[in-house]
Length: 228
Image (cartoon, rainbow, N blue to C red; front, side, top):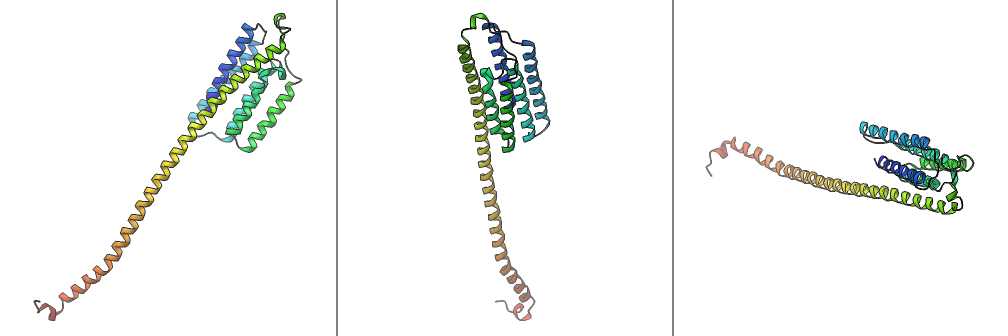
């Protein structure tokens, strides 16, 4: 399932970003709490794989719940790292885009409402980030760097997702074209069979009549005694 693959990429992206911010930028982050969220996403992916293997398809409700859990995990990560001031707040839009592609209309609007509510909540509820003195005067520069990393991550995930969707759509179209061609051939065979059946009926009726007449003639003494 595409959502499972995208979640693996999101987990890798979160781990890389957290390590970069914590180690390279020397910004203190609640690593333990954020690690728990990442572990939750990994467990969610493993459960999703097991569910996918045990059934043929995934319902709209199941996809909706899965995206809501992703939104919840992202909300917690943002709460632990600055709230709405975190440049990664725009990842909510990625969840909405995925929902627009995968979900029914009512589910998409529900996802829009929930992500909007999470955004508003994060404007006043969050864990502040304490910046080191080396970055104290360059807060805007750090925000731009975070926006760039968020853009690259979102763009990469969207490219992977859209590419896979297009590939699946092309495969589906090719399969439908093959089914239509096979159906046309079967219809042609049926029509030929009906034509042959009709021809056999048209030929069988006079031949049967001739057979009855010849059988009667064989029993007529006048005809039997005449060699010609």
